[in-house]
Image 1 (cartoon, rainbow, N blue to C red):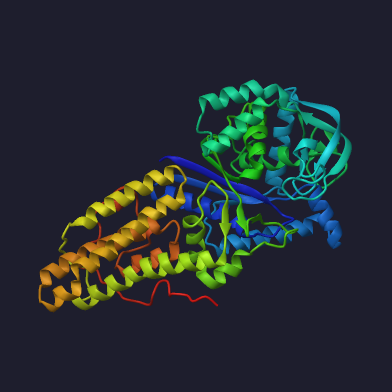
Image 2: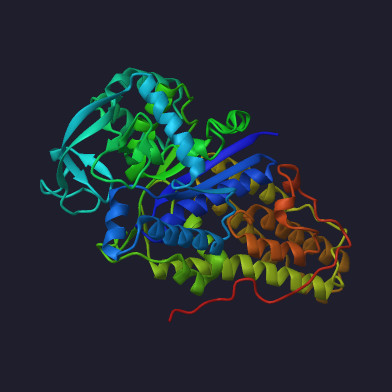
Length: 506
């Protein structure tokens, strides 16, 4: 059985979950569900990053201890992912003992390899990013390019990872693994950054206590990237379960936002090389989900909670919009109006309308059971083509194209209804032809429910049930389950309420 390991970033707990976090997490869930349909042994990891100066200051501002603060916000992420039907296999927190001990073992390996040295850092630091910047990277000479707030001038004794030693090794790695960073534009960014010359980076702080102490010098705590990034290894048994770690590592996909690409695609593989661990197989860095053309942040007061949209559009409506309307790769711009239009067009008018029309006619004209006849007409080729296109797009993580192929099949089926007019055939008494036409349409509904299940799992499961099929779509196995003719004759059909009632703008 092939194994497949996919991760989201671990989200920083000074920020409550918003639709930008949900965008990455739903993408990870859709990919994990898709690979499970193929029978893969899937491990899907998410979690929260809970150390650092930003957390310490946020706790102080609230008058609570750091642990109390991170416990509260980490739970809010769990609640959000439960709301969105995220089927993660593990949720890791960097304050857990199962992370701390392996992370310290990893740090010790870097130190023993001679790649960590003590020095003094003097430079410009953004607390919100937990990152250092050069003066020429700042907006207006003083503001963080991401948060647009003034950076701080810091002078501090730090331990440094000797990243400058890894320029040639990283370039060699990427030359032999050209798909290790996707999409291609992001790979070009990474290569440009490496070729521009790598500077050693800090892996410790002495100005805060909220973090993991360095094993060889407990007066220093680990700085964010040497701690946080290692969650991907500690979650699958590094040091604690070597057999399990060997099974799951290297990770197949890190899914992440473009603002943390440098840390994942330069810092992380260099540290893994130092520790004698193979780098990730692939990283996919998507663009920002913008609101009104701006990145979501507390300072801009433009964050949107997933729960607010789920209340209006349901879980499946939320999931579908962000996978079908936003191309996974470039920046996307969210608007409520676009979400409403997509919901009504794709889910209510196309998916929901097709299911409603076909099941109503089949119950009324075929006695409520699946007919044994099939026309094996144009819908068979349309279904085969849609599955092929979807499979190809999912390999590229092009979710919009993948589900666009499924919705093309839905539109083809709606057009077939208008062309063949089963109601007219029924009125003319041509029961055999009615059965053949509806048999094909019911088979399309089965294929649609199967292929749409990763993105709209609840509606797909309900449609599956109404078709008289046992279990849920995720119990099926691709590619065999997508082959034409999988709907058994004689099964009991059910009408039911609209799967996606049309919504009006308020």
